[in-house]
Image (cartoon, rainbow over all chains, first blue to last red; front, side, top):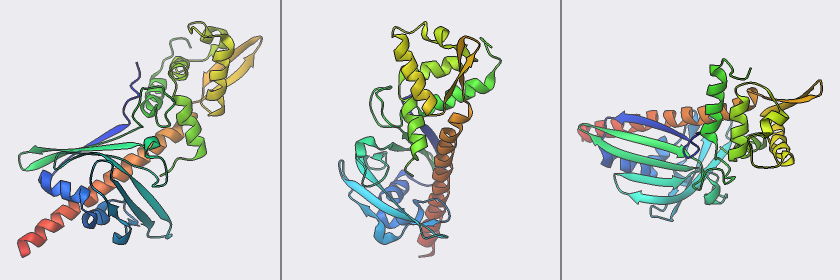
Length: 153
Length: 113
């Protein structure tokens, strides 16, 4: 059966301690420095962090070339210092219940830390018409289609 | 970051187990509407309604072949959704590169002090 409960996961072994990574993910001074793709800047003044369960955060990314602004924000769902951070990620004006959810965990691996990042659709039972439900099924169907040959063909 | 309307249609079309099942079956090749509807404990019109949603999201195509109405998957209908996910992945990987650079820089500053 198709798994619709998760979006995608990225993992990375980083030469840093879980404490260093926690600071990078939660301190607004640090977030302003990296929380954007290349070619985009996050002005420090746009970053606001209220780090507690139910607290919100917001920041605005500015495209270096065009000056276009991309406000982003969400609400913290779980805050376990140096271990686990869960927050919604979307347009700051949207209902956080309709936004995708990011889960980041940090696991010490000797000198390194294993950082696991997961982006998935809204919580809820699969098939309940939630907006992002079915991300993975889309890819599964594609992969299946690409595999061929067709059983009924 | 907000999805376009077209993407919304694709994602919400996929947000239903019957419609996902229909797509999975069509991934094996085109079949007639009657054959498609047979295994479901819902009425033919209800199946047609699901097909309508999939069709307007650009995920399936209905064609009339002689007296049979045939259904087939539109592979390109999923391309935008896959591309959207691939872009998000790429963006976050770039962020993580910057994160690593930032931590290295901080460590260098700490050593210099």
